[in-house]
Length: 146
Image 1: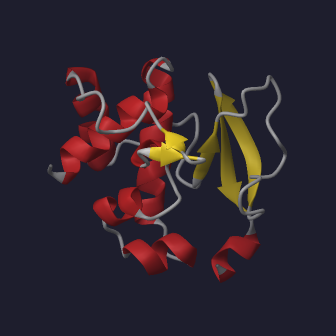
Image 2 (image 1 turned 30 degrees about the vertical axis):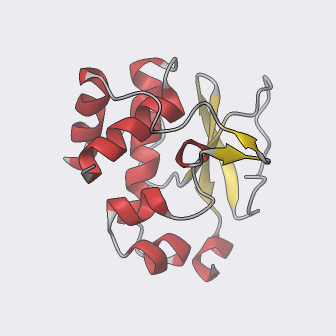
Image 3 (image 1 turned 180 degrees about the vertical axis):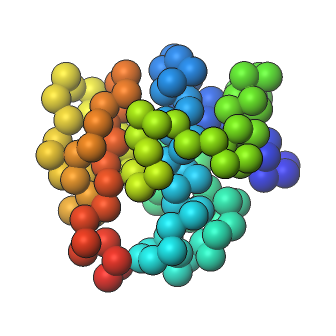
Protein backbone atom coordinates (compact mmCIF):
# COMPACT_ATOMS: atom_id res chain seq x y z
CA UNK A 1 0.00 0.00 0.00
CA UNK A 2 1.34 3.43 -0.82
CA UNK A 3 2.03 6.08 1.83
CA UNK A 4 -0.97 8.23 0.88
CA UNK A 5 -3.36 5.32 1.41
CA UNK A 6 -1.67 4.35 4.67
CA UNK A 7 -2.03 7.94 5.92
CA UNK A 8 -5.70 8.04 4.91
CA UNK A 9 -6.25 4.73 6.73
CA UNK A 10 -4.50 6.08 9.83
CA UNK A 11 -6.69 9.20 9.78
CA UNK A 12 -9.80 7.06 9.53
CA UNK A 13 -8.72 4.71 12.28
CA UNK A 14 -7.44 7.36 14.69
CA UNK A 15 -10.18 9.95 14.17
CA UNK A 16 -13.25 8.26 12.70
CA UNK A 17 -16.28 9.72 14.44
CA UNK A 18 -14.40 12.93 15.32
CA UNK A 19 -15.75 14.92 12.38
CA UNK A 20 -13.76 16.92 9.86
CA UNK A 21 -12.06 19.07 12.51
CA UNK A 22 -11.00 15.98 14.47
CA UNK A 23 -9.57 14.30 11.38
CA UNK A 24 -7.75 17.48 10.34
CA UNK A 25 -6.34 17.89 13.85
CA UNK A 26 -4.96 14.35 13.86
CA UNK A 27 -3.55 14.72 10.33
CA UNK A 28 -1.89 18.01 11.28
CA UNK A 29 -0.33 16.43 14.36
CA UNK A 30 1.07 13.56 12.26
CA UNK A 31 2.50 15.98 9.69
CA UNK A 32 4.01 18.11 12.48
CA UNK A 33 6.10 15.05 13.33
CA UNK A 34 7.23 14.92 9.71
CA UNK A 35 8.18 18.62 9.73
CA UNK A 36 9.81 18.90 13.17
CA UNK A 37 13.52 19.73 12.92
CA UNK A 38 14.69 18.40 16.28
CA UNK A 39 14.17 15.55 18.76
CA UNK A 40 13.13 11.93 18.34
CA UNK A 41 10.86 12.35 15.32
CA UNK A 42 13.49 14.27 13.38
CA UNK A 43 16.19 11.72 14.19
CA UNK A 44 13.94 8.76 13.40
CA UNK A 45 11.95 9.92 10.39
CA UNK A 46 14.11 12.60 8.74
CA UNK A 47 10.96 14.15 7.25
CA UNK A 48 9.53 10.89 5.88
CA UNK A 49 5.77 10.47 6.44
CA UNK A 50 5.82 6.69 6.15
CA UNK A 51 8.60 6.42 8.74
CA UNK A 52 6.56 8.62 11.09
CA UNK A 53 3.48 6.44 10.67
CA UNK A 54 5.38 3.16 11.02
CA UNK A 55 7.56 4.20 13.96
CA UNK A 56 7.03 1.52 16.62
CA UNK A 57 4.71 2.19 19.57
CA UNK A 58 3.32 5.48 18.23
CA UNK A 59 -0.17 4.74 16.91
CA UNK A 60 -2.44 2.07 18.35
CA UNK A 61 -4.12 1.84 14.95
CA UNK A 62 -0.89 0.43 13.49
CA UNK A 63 -1.06 -2.56 15.86
CA UNK A 64 -3.01 -5.75 15.19
CA UNK A 65 -2.60 -6.75 18.85
CA UNK A 66 -2.79 -4.56 21.96
CA UNK A 67 -2.17 -5.85 25.45
CA UNK A 68 -2.03 -9.43 24.17
CA UNK A 69 -5.47 -9.25 22.56
CA UNK A 70 -6.54 -8.68 18.97
CA UNK A 71 -6.98 -5.01 18.09
CA UNK A 72 -10.18 -4.81 16.00
CA UNK A 73 -9.54 -1.14 15.24
CA UNK A 74 -6.46 -1.00 13.05
CA UNK A 75 -5.51 0.44 9.67
CA UNK A 76 -6.01 -2.87 7.86
CA UNK A 77 -9.65 -3.33 8.90
CA UNK A 78 -11.42 -0.51 7.05
CA UNK A 79 -10.32 1.03 3.77
CA UNK A 80 -10.31 4.83 3.61
CA UNK A 81 -13.17 6.72 2.04
CA UNK A 82 -12.96 9.86 -0.09
CA UNK A 83 -13.04 12.17 2.97
CA UNK A 84 -10.01 10.43 4.52
CA UNK A 85 -8.03 10.84 1.29
CA UNK A 86 -9.12 14.49 1.16
CA UNK A 87 -7.84 15.16 4.68
CA UNK A 88 -4.60 13.26 3.97
CA UNK A 89 -4.03 15.20 0.74
CA UNK A 90 -4.68 18.53 2.48
CA UNK A 91 -2.19 17.71 5.24
CA UNK A 92 0.46 16.43 2.82
CA UNK A 93 -0.08 19.60 0.80
CA UNK A 94 0.76 21.79 3.80
CA UNK A 95 -2.64 22.49 5.36
CA UNK A 96 -2.30 23.12 9.10
CA UNK A 97 -5.48 22.89 11.15
CA UNK A 98 -5.33 26.10 13.20
CA UNK A 99 -7.05 24.40 16.11
CA UNK A 100 -3.82 22.53 16.91
CA UNK A 101 -1.26 24.62 15.03
CA UNK A 102 2.17 23.72 13.74
CA UNK A 103 3.85 22.63 16.99
CA UNK A 104 1.55 19.91 18.31
CA UNK A 105 3.28 16.49 18.26
CA UNK A 106 0.99 14.24 20.32
CA UNK A 107 -2.66 13.49 20.85
CA UNK A 108 -4.63 11.02 22.87
CA UNK A 109 -8.19 10.15 23.76
CA UNK A 110 -8.26 10.11 27.58
CA UNK A 111 -11.80 8.62 27.64
CA UNK A 112 -12.43 11.29 30.25
CA UNK A 113 -13.79 14.85 30.10
CA UNK A 114 -10.46 16.24 31.36
CA UNK A 115 -7.14 16.15 29.54
CA UNK A 116 -3.99 15.36 31.52
CA UNK A 117 -1.82 18.49 31.84
CA UNK A 118 1.20 16.64 30.47
CA UNK A 119 1.39 14.00 27.77
CA UNK A 120 1.40 10.89 29.94
CA UNK A 121 3.41 8.59 27.70
CA UNK A 122 6.65 10.54 27.52
CA UNK A 123 6.41 13.53 29.85
CA UNK A 124 7.79 15.86 27.18
CA UNK A 125 4.51 17.45 26.10
CA UNK A 126 2.14 19.89 27.75
CA UNK A 127 -1.59 20.13 27.11
CA UNK A 128 -2.47 22.63 24.41
CA UNK A 129 -6.09 22.04 23.42
CA UNK A 130 -8.87 19.56 22.98
CA UNK A 131 -10.64 18.81 19.70
CA UNK A 132 -13.69 16.64 20.24
CA UNK A 133 -12.52 13.52 22.14
CA UNK A 134 -8.78 14.04 21.62
CA UNK A 135 -6.35 16.04 23.75
CA UNK A 136 -3.42 17.62 21.90
CA UNK A 137 0.02 18.37 23.27
CA UNK A 138 2.89 20.66 22.31
CA UNK A 139 6.50 19.75 23.08
CA UNK A 140 8.31 21.11 26.10
CA UNK A 141 11.95 22.17 25.69
CA UNK A 142 13.00 18.76 27.07
CA UNK A 143 11.65 17.08 23.90
CA UNK A 144 14.61 18.45 21.93
CA UNK A 145 16.88 16.11 23.93
CA UNK A 146 14.96 12.96 23.03
